[in-house]
Length: 117
Image 1 (cartoon, rainbow, N blue to C red):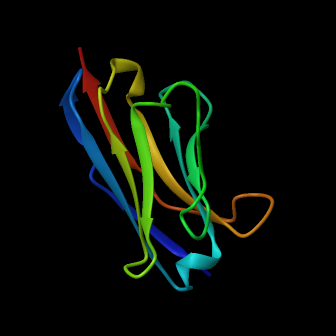
Image 2: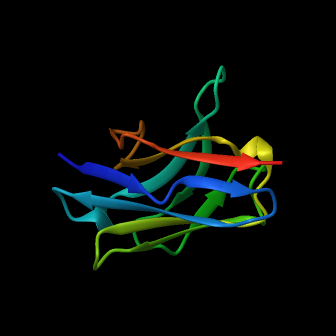
């Protein structure tokens, strides 16, 4: 079992930055692929970014590539999402997730990010 707790959300003006954190407990984080997802009001949850267990490989949704950076610190059991040049359309609840293979097995409770224009 893996427990995930997100933090770092808040209100920011367009063009600003936020850094989200995800604290993991329960298992050795390095075994898991970690990801960030988001869900805007009235929309389905969508993929944002993922990072391999070692941190050597990552992948981004087209909407955030070049603006967001995912990283991890396995020694601290932490995953981060650095969000730069934020846009109003980035407003959503952001979720941290973990998986070994296949489907995402574990989810956090989410943290709200609001970008004002």
